[in-house]
Image 1: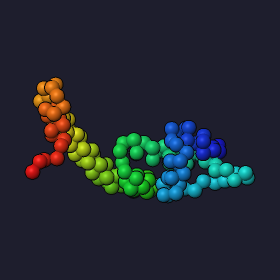
Image 2: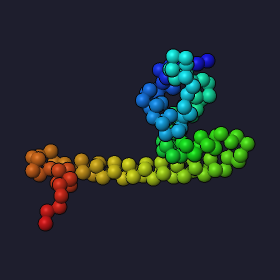
Image 3: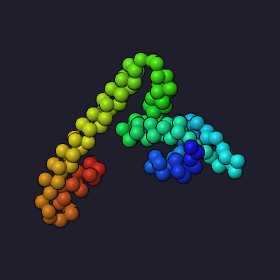
Image 4: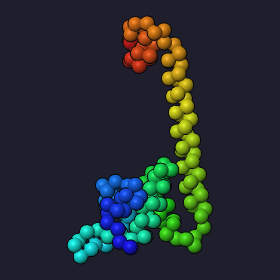
Length: 133
């Protein structure tokens, strides 16, 4: 099976530019070429790009995706390093969630103090404005 870059993009719901970028940074290997010099992708590239897309959807940054791919390329090794990487990522996700929840509480508090009067008396604008000296 040979896929064009457009077909690979459609099959993985990935923009063509993103596929080219992943090739440039080494997440995807340089594809083979057809006699017409078009990129030709196979099952291995489809699987690898699907892996990258799923990892990105789970919020893994590109450097961690690269690490995960390297680990996936060694199927006989212990998965302890994968577990540690995933645990570290989960801790970061939980930290971001806590930050967003705190932000939500702060915004909710600001909104609740709104008296719906004039902009000059608006507590939200007041909270956003730089402190006056």
